[in-house]
Amino acid sequence: MSREAEVATGLPVEETTITRNVIAMAMVGGLAGTVVMLPVMVLVPELLGVFQTEPLTDFVGFAAVFGIQPTLTLGAVLFGIGGMVALPLVFLSFGAFLPPVEPRHLRGVTFGTIFWIGFVIAFWPDGGIVTTASFVVFSLLGHWLYGFTLGLTLDRTTGIPEHEV
Image 1 (cartoon, one colour):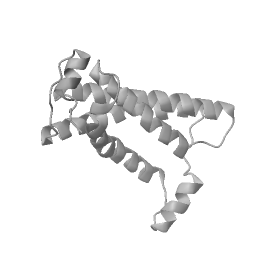
Image 2 (cartoon, one colour):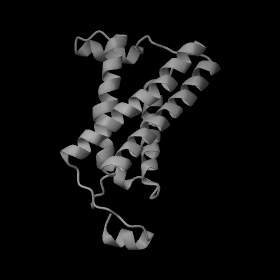
Image 3 (cartoon, helix red, strand yellow):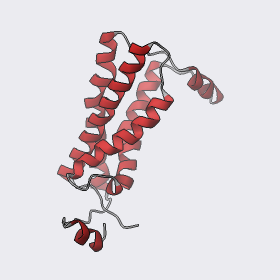
């Protein structure tokens, strides 16, 4: 944010650049967020019997192009890499531009909601109303927990980077 933004909001704005330490803390926040979201997105739906572990047919065809056989293990590895590397780096780039202005760590919840929309579209389950409703509710709660944890970790350790465009 610029000096004008600080004057407009009346809130002090700390300039935080993206350093190796900030990237490392974002990845720690991503790891923590992934760990926090797993019980909500996997354990509870599994206990309720609404969890779907078989690969979606669209992804089976896509993976075959690369000669890869989709498995639960491969899915878990990709889920972990996304949550601990890719998403934290995206948050570092865009977190400064997300609402709300204060408290800053809630920008992670906004971030989680944005990525939840894509998640829902990509992984929409085949099933009845209970399966679909459970998927929507548990995946949204999981993404909110992930974003909250990521945002809180960054805000409390290095700060959420602010940049000018």
